[in-house]
Image (tube, rainbow, N blue to C red; front, side):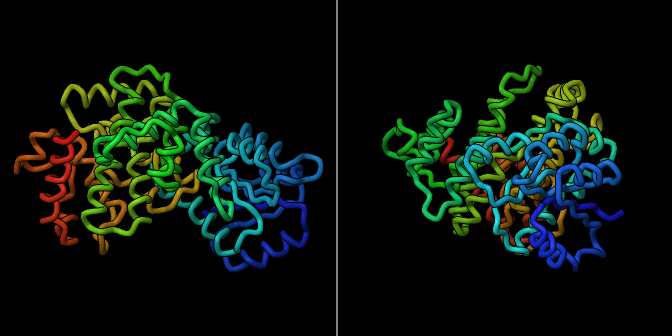
Length: 402
C-alpha cells in the first residue's frame, strides 16, 4: 500500500511548485494537497494519511491549531512544519506538537529527503500490532524544546556561542550534563570546568546539540518508578558509550563529523526504554525481571514479552524527529547488526562495539576473555577484528585513569 503524504499551504503558487517537485513520486506515494486547515481535516477524515506537512500561517485555522487537532485525533500521523514564519516563540511552541520543523525556502531535494526519512520509520518497527499501539499514544514525546532552541540559533549564519551558553544555563539538568561531560576523566582536561559557557566552548556546538537532545528527552521522564530501571543510570551508560565512541573514532582517525554523529547515536541508543517504561510498564518490568534474574539478555527478553526491542522503538522515535539516518540505524542496530558488512567503520558498527565495551567489566576488558554482545564476524569481515583488542585496551586505560 502506498504511503500517503498531505501538504497544507494556502499559497497557490507554492502548492503548484510542490506538485511539480513531487510529480516523479506519484507512482511511489499517494500525495494530496490542501489550501486550508479545514480542507486538510476533511482529507484526513477520508483517507489514511501517514505524513502531514503544513505551513503555520493559514487563514482561519492556523497551522498550529491544525497540528493540535491532528495530534489529538490522528496521533499516528507524522507532523512536519514547513514554514517561512520562524519566530522563536512559534518554533518553541511547535516543538510541543510537531515532530519536525523546516524553514522556507526549502530546497526540493532536501524536502524529498525529509519525507523519505520520515517514511523510514515504517521499516524500523516491523511488529504491526506494536506499531499500531505506539501510533495511538497521544503523549509520544515531541522534540525537546531545549534542543529546538539551540537548533534555531545554530541555523543562523553566525551562531552565537554566548546565546547557546545562555540557553544551556536556563536548564539546570542540561547544565549538569554539560559540566558532567566536560569534567569527565575520560576527556583528560587538566582543570575542572565550572561554568556552562566554558564547557560549551570546549565541547563544541555539535556535542552540545547532542547533549541537549538527550538531556531534554530524559529529564522529562525523570520520575518514572520502575524497579530495576533508572533514567540516571541510562544517561550514565549513554554518556560512557559516547566517550568510548570518541576514543575509538580518534584511534581510527575518523573525520570529526562522523565522530559527532556516532557520539549522538551513543547518547541516544537506549531512548526506546523510555517509551517502554511510559507506555508498557508491565511488559517492561517483566523483561527487566527476566534479565536481572540471569535468564536471557534484555533485548531477547523484550522480543519474548513485547514483540520488539527498545532499539527498534528508539529508532522509531528518532526517525519521527528527523535525525540523520545513520543515527537512526545505529540506534536500531546497537544490539544486533542487521545489514551485510559495509566498507569502513560505520556509525552503526562503532556504537554497537561501544555499547558492548561499556557493559563489560574492567576485568574482562583487561583480559583475553571473549566480549559478549559483539558481532565478531561482522568486525572481522570489515578487517577490524584485530583492532578490537586495541579498543579494549584504550577503554581499560581510561577506566584506570578515571
